[in-house]
Structure formats: structure tokens, C-alpha cells
Image 1 (cartoon, rainbow, N blue to C red):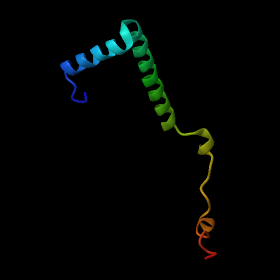
Image 2 (cartoon, rainbow, N blue to C red; image 1 turned 180 degrees about the horizontal axis):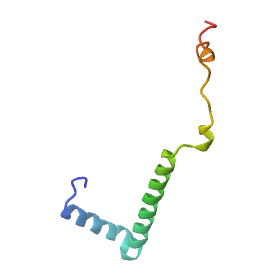
Image 3 (tube, rainbow, N blue to C red; image 1 turned 180 degrees about the vertical axis):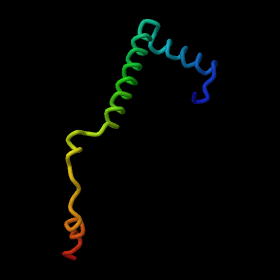
Image 4 (spheres, one colour; image 1 turned 120 degrees about the vertical axis):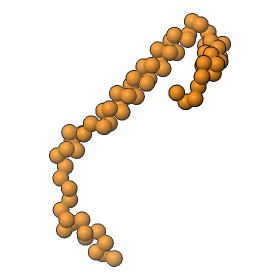
Length: 71
């Protein structure tokens, strides 16, 4: 996992305790977990086909080639 070992994780935990304090650390963890969960959910929704775009038909071939005709 990103090349982090036990000593590095302990240092990060100690820095987090110093910055946020033991009372705020669970709240920070909860907010981080919620953010990751919402990001994953939004990513899954972005992969789903959009119903509004499902009914769109491509442009006819004769219209697609007439873009550069005025030059």
C-alpha cells in the first residue's frame, strides 16, 4: 500500500494526534470515510449510461460531411 510500513504509519498517527487531538481524531476519520464513500458512489454513477443521452441518435452521414464545404 504505497510502500508505507508500520513505522511510517505510526509517525502519521502521532502527527495526526498532535494536530487534531484525541477528541477530534474520530471525527476526522469519519469525515474521511464518508468522503471516500461518496466519491466511490459518484464514480459508479458516472459509469452508468445516462437515460437522457440513451435516446440521442447520431447525425446523418450527409450532414456530418458538410462542415468544411464553405471553405
